[in-house]
Image (tube, rainbow, N blue to C red; front, side, top):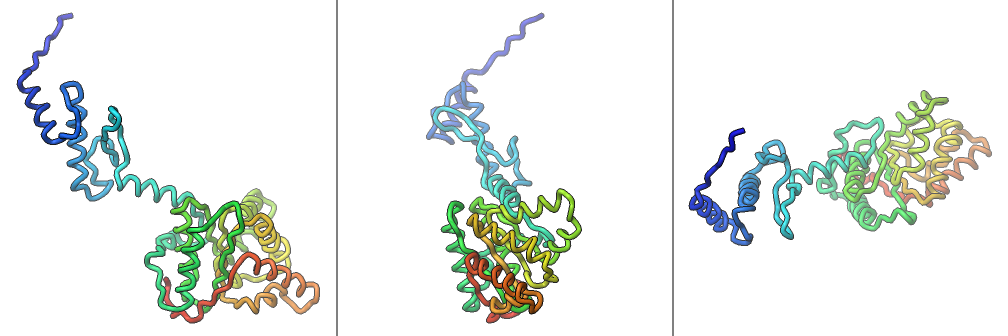
Length: 286
């Protein structure tokens, strides 16, 4: 095979290296690493005017070259980091029977135009800041009229927890009840119950809109609440029912044994949540 010899213009190469040194004076650039620094410079220029991950012009989308400790490496740009964080956040937040759009809720947009909202906002910030998976973290029982932002409040909290790598489950309680009834005797039933018991932070939205029955109280809700209390698992609840009326809701009827069971659940709830009324809020969604 014929050997092909390639001749380099030494002067042109020297000029090429010199220009790179002028643009990147902080680096020790030579003929052996000049090409890599050319890539680094080109990617840096691309990043300056980049508008987002979909507009990335670099060879490795969302990545750019850096030079540290004598080595070249690729790192995530800010848009790539944001995409990774969103993906991680989505994996930490589980929702059941609620529209995905609810996960757009952001604590930065949370209205604090009432005393209860100011109190809730402070409670959320404190909870997220001080959350400790190894100790009891008391949640909230948010109650009030329709459309005052109870669900939105829980969604804001869910997003804040995800940013702190804390897993949570936000669930529309009436639909959960229907799903559990349909899943009796299947592996899905056991899977749902286990998830409700063990997830780091459980949020039950619209408790009280379901048809409370002895089965739901004694076989589902009671054991879940009891487990979470014993294991120090956090619970948040939204409801239209004031705490003072919860015993009646869980009692179902006036039978003494049902009254005792209702009081038992409410007693355990008091150890898990702090009640805040949102009845001073105007009918808004956030």
